[in-house]
Length: 432
Image (cartoon, rainbow, N blue to C red; front, side, top):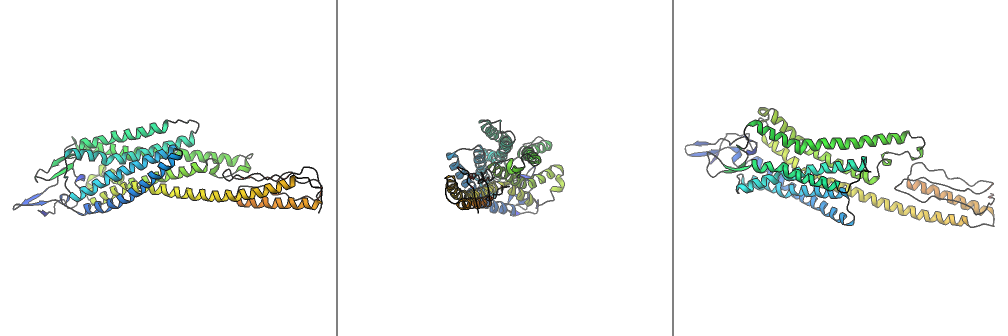
């Protein structure tokens, strides 16, 4: 068997509509390039092996972390992220090893049943990953825009629909793919879709339906949900800025969303952006192939294979995004703990001063003035430590009359601290 110049551009039999040509010259069979080990197979083995290791470590770690967190107190978003990690692991353990072994053997060296079964699971994980991200987007939409419409079963229903939808969308693969023998080369078997469609139009229609289910439908849901969320955040922030009565509470979008919700929203949006970046190039060339097949045939098939591999790399990116935000969350929590400890210490000092002032003083009024001055100085320190919005200026000790009744501080909701109150049990003149 000698490699032939026939179909030199073709690197993968799955981009063909029918069997490639072979030549029989003087009793020597010349196979086309897609029938022998080529650069496309080398690319698949190398890249899929790297992605397999990265995705296995990343998604397994994320699944372990989410499982531990769920035991302490399950959250709906954590459950959905667990399903996303499971979907990515299905891509890792079903699609990637299949691509590696298939590229190594070139031919299909198994049964027709295994061909249909693996073709089903080859896309099932991809569908499930897309549909779970749709569930996450809808969950954020209801959690932020419709918080009063709480439903304990809504998350479960969406996840069940995601799994059932993935099964339904993957079933056609089991009927389209089958094992065939090359008409001119006996013993050469391949898992193909050849002769499964009545016409080229049906093939085109199936490709469009696949693209809509796996990419276009999730993309529309992402745009609608997160567009509505940010539009509502913008409107509420504008109302806060225009409210003169609430001028002392003027802040950024943190007033509209809690810090936990804001961090979760950023993480889910990052996951969606990674999905769009990974899958858009592949589906652009698929649309190009559907509209102008002759011009796409001139493009090296390594490009198309590389874009599909890049799309599958989305399963490796999700745990990296989750890990990045989880590390940031832990760092912020540690910082908040240390800040709160400092605030607690200062609060104890202020309470001590407050208790001292609440005792009746019969001595010199200078002692009272010094105590008030020390308390107000501590109040200034507390205000600088909390980095709050606008804090009331500490009042200095008056030269005559009674002691000040109160010195109040305003703080963020997340960094709350006791209000400092300075009060005398009986009127005492404070003299210098």
